[in-house]
Image 1 (tube, rainbow over the protein chains, first blue to last red):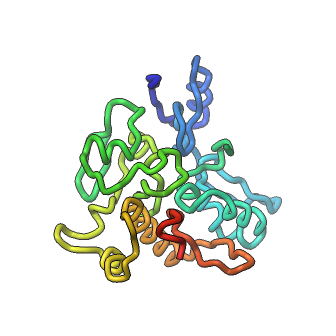
Image 2 (cartoon, one colour):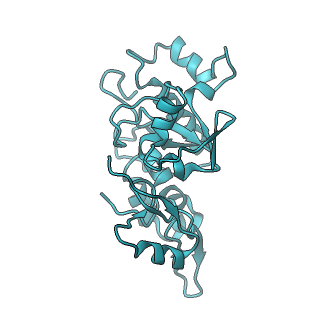
Length: 98
Length: 141
């Protein structure tokens, strides 16, 4: 197995800095390197009526959010149509779809 | 860095490549959780992390620093059975039993999701919510 080091990003700037290091990769729920799960998991309503969704928001949290279910039901259903409950509990918005 | 497993704190392995599943089975000898596919497809490795069902094969142990994990061994006090374990026995809910710990942990996680009213897609044929570890032999109920 190929050895690697693991680091958890403290904030977005830290994530960008660490991600720029040679060989670095970002990790959401489960492959390797710079762990970005510590970044924002907030779902905030914007003044213009939109939603700002943190990159580290878990799929389950997004699909069960009241505002998402009320105003963006297709988004909730799309999330629920994918993977399994276990994976939705782990996967983050920033994870790349395989 | 520590992870709490069935109520006891353990050191996170120094090597970040250790999966949560291997930490449980190889390092801590908690072999109840099974390695069925090791790629997130079968569900036999399902454990509860802070009460939520997750796949331990897709998790690096190091990511779970500070979290609380419950495995099948920790569902009930020593010598006792969780009511779902008892129900599986009473209703003959398994054949070889290899995936059963994952099924049970997944079902307990699912019950918590139902309690929390986490939504699910209802399919056209109105199939019930699945626990996502359903090999052909045991069927999907």
